[in-house]
Image (cartoon, rainbow, N blue to C red):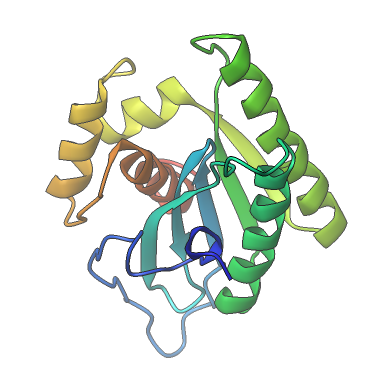
Length: 183
């Protein structure tokens, strides 16, 4: 199996602290996966035990692969993450409305098509969250730059490898925060 398809590879994932505040007698938590879709996809996963893991995974096609292989690997990666997590209750993704170019918008449309079809097939709830909402939640500023997003996640005790992972962490926190986002 290619390294790029491993969902929690040590080579691709930073090591944020495991957050676990489950108590006996509390309602079970929902397993939530947050995604910053792209060729280098940032991901953050809150397990139903309360622990959090995150990282990045690259779906760049090799020289001898067709353009659709990246999407097939993405679908397989979703299956692997779901199996390793013991099931998912919800997926949230960064909803991008404006792209730098035509190629970027076409690629994003491919990621979104695969994700939405996969979620529908597996009966997993999914929701897009606008970029500005995520940035405002994490930094207080809706147009924060990449460095500010990384700094905000570091201030919360995580160690994101790049802005993709930082965005996924911020999105996960937004989705699971009882006071600010949705849970």
